[in-house]
Image (cartoon, rainbow, N blue to C red; front, top):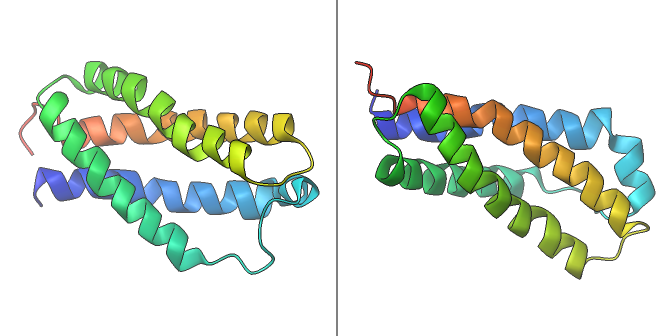
Length: 133
């Protein structure tokens, strides 16, 4: 399987179940109390978003960090991707949407973003590592 596709899958495969469980199961009541989400969440839009992000992150990783060791590549990628993702997935949502607690939203989504990139960064790095595939 080509490394690029592996990189895309390394993002999508863990992100969907992690996001689903985090937002709609484990912390559902907390998110409900924030009154930020629609009652009828459109899961295909979430999957499409993850696919686009996976392609973008795999492209970026392939250009900037391919061939690095898994640890070094994961740390470099996480150092770039985590604050960037936080800016467009947490800050901008908090700035634009009504919610009962902006601070509460920023805290829980910051935690999610950190956990997400702790999980996906080494997997993407593994897909593009210097080792023979």
